[in-house]
Image 1 (cartoon, one colour):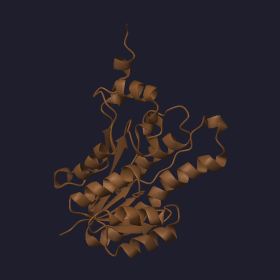
Image 2: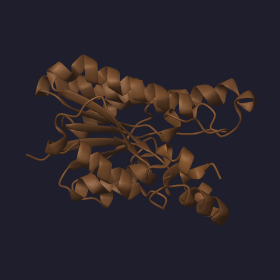
Image 3: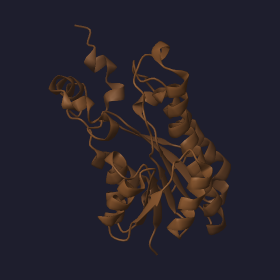
Image 4: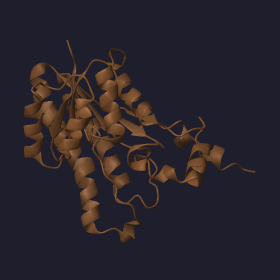
Length: 247
């Protein structure tokens, strides 16, 4: 039977790569994005995919988008996210709240909608996109690290509360990914060289690396994995002593 998947923030960047990988693996994909035209354009390039329009912070819009998908999702990938760069003391409360709303509250709204539909079908799988910022916040990242840390615990709570009813919930923490919101950062050759040189595997990650992690976690071989955060970072979060040697 064809697996059904909805990917939020699926119209571009990492989300679009995840949609493409799922479609290539035989899933029927709902490309959900607040930009409906972009969602439909992305879906049109994928076999059997459907473009869905919703602001993930609006519960009514999310419900309507899930209804229009026409099937109960077996998999939800909560990928939609934004960032507002700047030091914390320079952040406006409005910008801080907006990042929390989209990255954390939006993930809650879409995951809640998915779980309510999954339970009568015997379960399903939630995957949230966190970040290595959930473990080591970077200066100038504003509310993003706090939001991603919250998302990590949110998905663990879903895993604990609904595991007995067949729902798994996991997260993926991308590292230095050359794509999506981070793409402008790596347009600077100096930044690109410094960051890639700090990764033990010697390169930046790609959206395809993240998409591959989604496919793994939703595979039968990962069926006993829930409440876990899969860090996809080429080893950089463990490279402090390597990058700051004694001599």
